[in-house]
Length: 303
Image 1 (cartoon, helix red, strand yellow):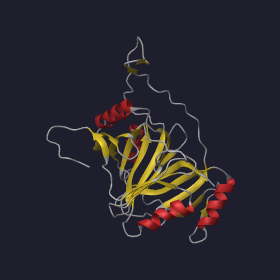
Image 2 (cartoon, rainbow, N blue to C red; image 1 turned 90 degrees about the vertical axis):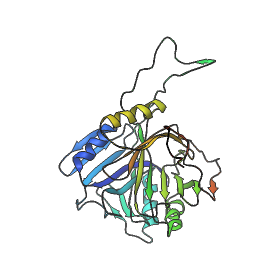
Image 3 (cartoon, rainbow, N blue to C red; image 1 turned 180 degrees about the vertical axis):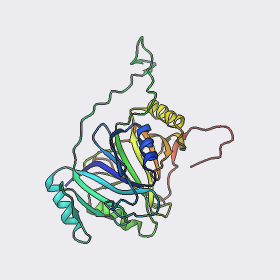
Image 4 (cartoon, rainbow, N blue to C red; image 1 turned 135 degrees about the vertical axis):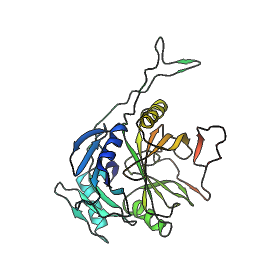
């Protein structure tokens, strides 16, 4: 079997209208909107589904308040899907939906689902840049993005309890084929899907010692779109949770916003790619959070 990517993230929320506006402002395409649920889409055909917290069709909440109820992963084949079902059925309930997708729960209580991936190919055209000795843009200026238009959901980060976090990690790495790329032992585990080369598609973070959504990351085209997309969100009244910066682990440029669905969203660009030749890293001490972050006079030091 091979899990290829995030296929869908399902939230249970209190204020459906606010959450719909938030993700529309963040640049996702609205697919459907009713009094009971809202569905939005990325260009590569991944989905964010927003449901009322009291919707009886939702998986049970792993923690109080607005939160992720389920992460659905895209699998490469019917055989791979069947293999996941057999593996999980050894020690937990597995439910099959009307379309053949599978649903269960992970060690921390989050809903997990699996279905055949249905990607749409999108070729993002990079912005041409100029550098001494390398002219990529001649006789033309830069056209602003003005607002975010994310390409895809690139990763999900979940907070889990410190006690038992090794077992929570092992559930994904030993039973579902994820690979631990970076393991800062006091903090969490950055994991990669078997069928992908992103630095991480998934992060389990035990440092907060609680069960909650941390964030989801939306990949945009470049540094400029991280900045301009963040400015647009600020103009629309959304509150920034982390200023513009570049992560240490993963190297991606980021900007983060508090989300009414729980946790945060991250605009991310230029993240590291690691193929099968990369040797995973383990850190006894957690490396600094960022290589740099936008600063103003009087700011305290942050890590």
